[in-house]
Amino acid sequence: MNGQELNFVSPVEVTGEVVNRNNLFLVKGLVKATVSTNCAKCMEPFELKVQAPLEETYTQENEGFNQAGDDELITFHGDVIDIEPEVIKSLLMELPMRLVCSPDCRGLCPQCGTNLNLKQCNCQNEVIDPRLAILKKLQQ
Image 1: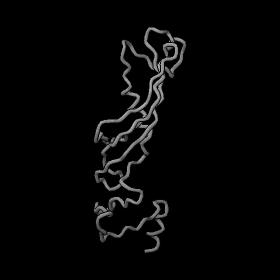
Image 2 (image 1 turned 180 degrees about the vertical axis):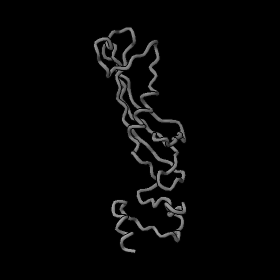
Image 3 (image 1 turned 90 degrees about the horizontal axis):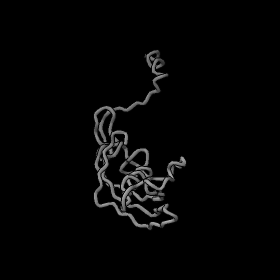
Image 4 (image 1 turned 45 degrees about the vertical axis):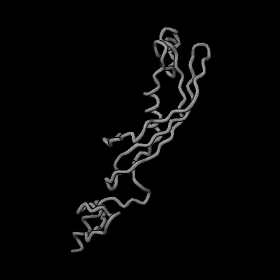
């Protein structure tokens, strides 16, 4: 995820049901997990609780359903359905685009790297639009 590492803090919890409808196995439930990662702004480690819906349809490889061009079906062989890949996808889909420790995280100072959540630095952070930087030179 954009080079950001995610680790599961505890086992992923999946609750739900499997219904067999004419050899189409409908898996419907809820996935819960706690992941550990670093904040995208201040780089401090934090934990995030994630909850995601899970709704997939599986069919056995030899049933011929996927040959009809139905891309929504996931095939399996044998007597066991492995839902792990779909569980992980469901969790990843629920994650925010930027993982931050809190909505009001102030991040790091772009000049000295101080974590602005912990202490204030003495750097002067004058933000100038790069398109207007030439006007600053004219002022001098």
